[in-house]
Length: 377
Image (cartoon, rainbow, N blue to C red; front, top):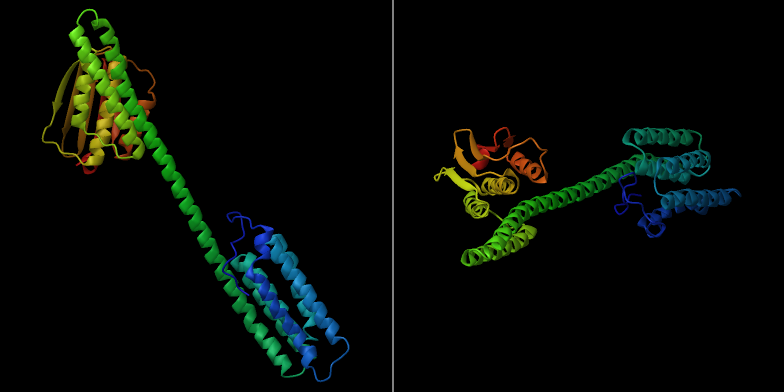
């Protein structure tokens, strides 16, 4: 009376439709109740009440077990099935030994829906009922032996199998939920990555484009040749931004500190900010750390170009035995304004590497980014 195709009932399980319950193979298990008809059929001295009793037991068992299948196993529905099955089995078995199959049905229902502790208590109770009815049974040998001994074994075999099947189905459902949760978290992480990358990318590129466009407007009548150069730089920046957006969406975009240093020179050139760089040329970083530090450098330079009103920007990159340090400092207006989305995203990126970001704004603004050597080299 076990089944392997029925989902586990409970809060985590998907509800089964009435159609799916009607099509389950568990209906075939009702065939076991036909054994109740065997006694009056083979009885050498048949009493007038044996057939009515056997038929009534079969009908009531089919109704109770069928109702359980249609409703699905739950605490309330289980008790409304298992108790009547046990009571009817207790009343009918002394007169029809094969009616002990009702105890087996009751054990199967208990195994489907009750916790392990409660189900085993029911198995013991059903075993006691089966043994008690055997003592007062009026059924002669060998029918007495066949009915009660088989039920005694099947109560535990079927009940424990149902418990095992239920645990297996619950584990499958838990695994499905874990997989779904992992997929959701991966999707959320990917959306956050794309959002951070697009912010870093477009913030830097559009700032450069806007500033160069403003400079180009001023130079059109004063220095046409330089205005043409700036217009070409605007076009190049726009094309780079478009290519980077495409690669960001596909997840393959990578940058380096040196590439961002070159981009910083171009971005600050149109804002009259002098860039001074002091980097350790022998410093080699792993790709993941190089990418995150490059994006951090891009965000910091974009903020200098947008908000600092600085004349000089210092960028330094070095390492000691414990950490790699990237410093971006300017001599602008400084301040203690709340951090925006860009700096918050920068902190999240560096935190994933086990690093930290420190910002000071008393004399200009200094952004110090440190990453453990173990994560960066």
